[in-house]
Length: 369
Ligand code: AMP
Image (tube, rainbow, N blue to C red; front, side):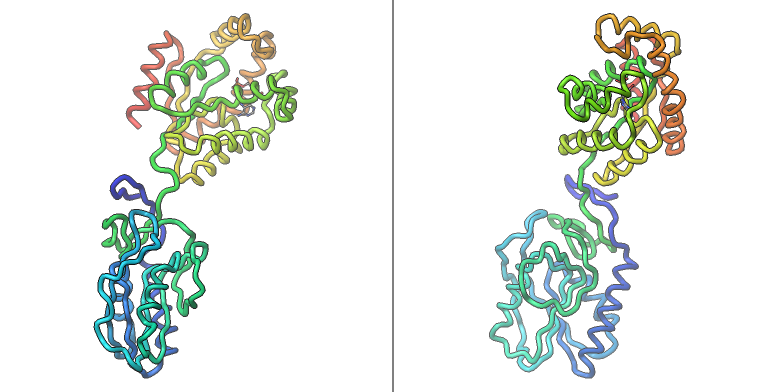
């Protein structure tokens, strides 16, 4: 991963893949051009790398020239194309191949066609190393395309972000989500996850998602999801994975601009942990740590029974349901310790003590991430 000014970029197309694509372009174009001496016209600034590599591979004599156009401001392609250096030689009767680094909206290409409108060239063809079909808004034919890419901002191999990144030998793609910190707060029922999450979300400006709270909200509002979840929750059992995963995805989507998340009560199964990894991956992000509050069972039962006196939660009122929830945790959920340990992301924290002391213990872990 690299950072240019304020933005993070991830590796996207390797130097080898670029080289192979240029090789293919060379073969296609040289076969079409035959024995004629073509004039390759690079569009500066971005095309300097592709032109250089291309002509080094070109098997026969050729000429090279450049025109210089400017269209990008920051990460946005602008309509307003500036012609900084036009054609400096007479191309009457010549076979001209435009060599572009990238074609996205096609605005630059429209300007290229305007430049050639009154030139009496024999043939004008367009070749581009990268092409964004989803962004292309023009009808001009693209004769040779190296690699089609999705409509994401890229840098490297001649392409820049505000002037930086042109020198990179490979292509990087902008990260969908800029830096997030994502924590899984883990521990058996009654360990104090909700209480601690309230402090941590303020301190680290994170969005707290408690699946239990979301279910309870749905039950209170008598939604279809609430009705479905209630039957499981009342017995202290887990709600089926797919229901929980869909709900969690929707909660994350609602907070697309978050600095990061505290997941509380999720994941509880391996399938949920896999789904969470996939979700984070789709945001170009990841879970940074699972922080587990470790509390003895008998203390948990005591805590939950005393919470039940005021919380109104049916699953806190009955000792056998409480014990079932704790058993569910050890049967189905505790295995997630292995899942995150394998990624070196598991941190156990003593969950017995004053609320403040435990917050300090958790912060010590988070500050080191
Ligand atoms: P909690 O508030 O985290 O103790 O959750 C209360 C109840 O909500 C649990 O006993 C489950 O029935 C249900 N629940 C919460 N999170 C999940 C989850 N990730 N997967 C399945 N069920 C859940």
